[in-house]
Image (cartoon, rainbow, N blue to C red; front, side, top):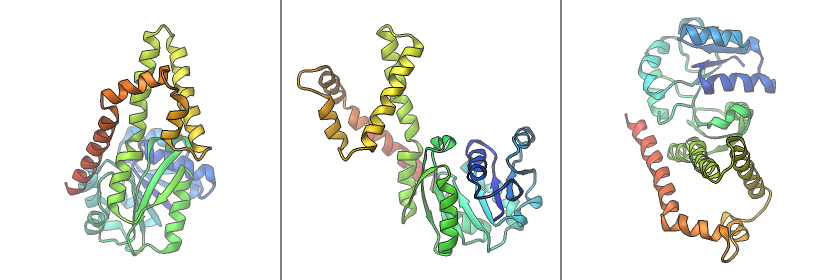
Length: 267
């Protein structure tokens, strides 16, 4: 399978490296379309596939085309590539908010998979939700899922509304985690720890807590109860969080992300 990634940014280059590392494809079958000359030079030096500067050079050679550009760049992108596309090509879009119908109408194609990965895909720990148009065959869908699995975990969802929801949770979620980590790191520093000590305390605490959750059948509430003994330090912190409606604020933030994903799909 000849794979073309349009957009050599963080996710585009992550996919190229992951696909090659897994040996699902090789450099002879990997292509990247990057309009920025500076980025193109940098990508070429990484030896992760053939880098092209124009759609005319590579679109017709591709079986799978991955759309990895910013949503606001789609009008120009679609205009550039439409003359070269073929109805039998499979398109995988990771553009937030851009609907399958939008891509189908703009390019005159029907085999479209829409996915929402997240940043930990860069280290093979990503979470990707994906869905597809009816025209994508079972074999094509499995092939694409195998590619996506090289960057972490995947889940197939039935509707695009679920993709918007995944955007708000797993897509934006790493930033929520970093936000909380930053607050804890700053708290640790204010208590007298050095920068490196604070970073270690917080990062290992997060890592350990996630592993505990993943390797057990306990719910988050049950784990909180195990840590928060009556009258203890954890209970004091939890009371403060609850008093400041932290739970409600987190939910509101996720809802704001969902609303924005839906808005992007309408624009």
